[in-house]
Length: 370
Ligand code: NAD
Image (cartoon, rainbow, N blue to C red; front, side, top):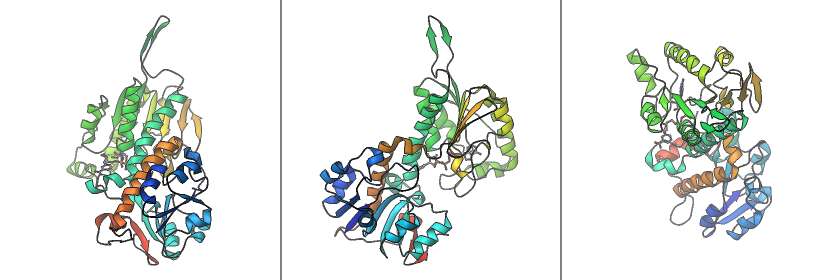
């Protein structure tokens, strides 16, 4: 079987869907066609891919393979180079109906890895987790870089410097890593989330949980989320959360917001009034900026200063850690591939498999996920 790894063409995308490590494992059984320069932005040379057993080819050859491994959904130009019936694996944005429709029309069998279910068997294929973990780490790094003070408490001959206060909004995979990273840098951390199990996780990392009590059974029930993901909370709970967060934000030096609700606009958690109440020179990293933002003042792809607060709207922080983000993503993809390749090294797509059902967005010209 021919497996293609094209270079990503989406602006700002630095990652690549296979690394020499994963190519080596695949090359024993398959022809691996890596587009020349595909790994360049992740510091992987063509020579390293070739040494792992890949053939270095043109974009047309990589995209024309039987199975194409990508990070992002193909552009119309890329789709045009893919062959009918090819298998495509990547972060294909399963909620983008137009894109899924176009891939169905191109007769691709496309797997959107963001839709991998949160079951134990699928953990090694969970791209959202592998990339969110990296993004959570990098969020703290970019915040620290912009912040004009120290993160840790310091006692020096010239006097004492206070530790930075960091507020983390949304404690999923990214938020937990942000807490752990800020903790390592010596910050004092508080965090908020809607889901009940989060309190214990936050406290186990040495941070303080901002408790917004549930006052109705409905609130408690919605807060459980579904499949590990949050659901939109009732307006009254959101109002009480906002009041508490407003008070905590006034004291914070850095706020990192990560709150997402799958398939929806991100919830607004840091209002303009709250930004106005923050200290000058403080920093917000809005990791939900691509989904509309947790702060209405954040701007996609830009760092802006509003009311004296630096607001960072970098949409894809994992791309700033291109080498490790690619390494982990490529392992996720390799594990997914094992699911659709049988012992005879042929494609075998079991439509009854729970992971296949969740991720296969189109096949045979048909859209399978609406
Ligand atoms: P996510 O990226 O979808 O959302 C980020 C966080 O924002 C979540 O914790 C969510 O509860 C929170 N949030 C949503 N609305 C909010 C609001 N109004 N205020 C504050 N916070 C809000 O989440 P995620 O990182 O994908 O992880 C969600 C959970 O799933 C985590 O507990 C994670 O550990 C778990 N998980 C399980 C598996 C598995 O079992 N295989 C895999 C990955 C993640």
